[in-house]
Image 1 (cartoon, rainbow, N blue to C red):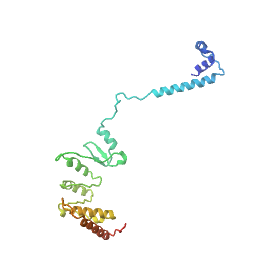
Image 2: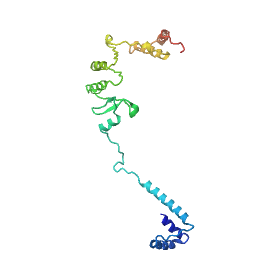
Image 3: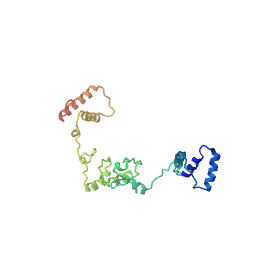
Image 4: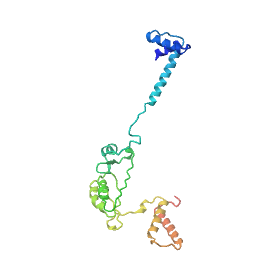
Length: 233
C-alpha cells in the first residue's frame, strides 16, 4: 500500500498518462521510488481508503445460517432440558424431565395445569409422585381423602406435621379457629360477612336489609371488643 501511495505521489498533478508511465517504470524497477512533498499526503489518503475498504468488507461478512430463515427453535430432548432446569430438589413433570424448585436460577414458573377426565390418573401419575418427593410444604385439596391415605404415612416418616380440615366428618378433623387470625377491622368485617353468607339460606330474598346490617354491625363490634382491636385502628 505504501509503495503504491509513493508511486501515486510522484504522478500527482500530471494526470493519468503520467501515472501509467510511472507504473510501467516502477514495475521494471520497483525500488526506484522517490520521496516528494506530496508523498505523506498520498500515504494518508491511501491508508484511509484501505481502512474504509476493510470496514466495508467486514460489514458484509455476515454470519449466515442456511436453512434457519424462519427460526431455529426446536423441541429439546429430556437430557437437554434436565441439564438446564434440573436441580437437587425438583418437581416431576414427566418420567424423564424434572424442573428445579429454585425459580431464581432457571427463571421458569412452577405452575402446572393438569387436564384429564375422571379416571385419567391425574392424582396417581402426577400429584402423588410429587408429594412423595417430600421437598417442600404442601396445601392439598383432597375431597376423597385418597391422597392423605396414600401419602400421609410417608410424609409423617419424613418429619412433616400433617393437619387435616375435614368438614364432612368433624371427628377426624383438626380444629380451625379463624378468630386467632384477626388483626384489624378489615379482617373482622371479612369474617362477619362470610358467617352471614354461610348462614343465609340459599335462594332466600332479603325483605328488610335493616336486620342484616344490624347483625353485621353488632357482630363486628363484638369481635373487635373480644379481640381487643382498636375502634379506629
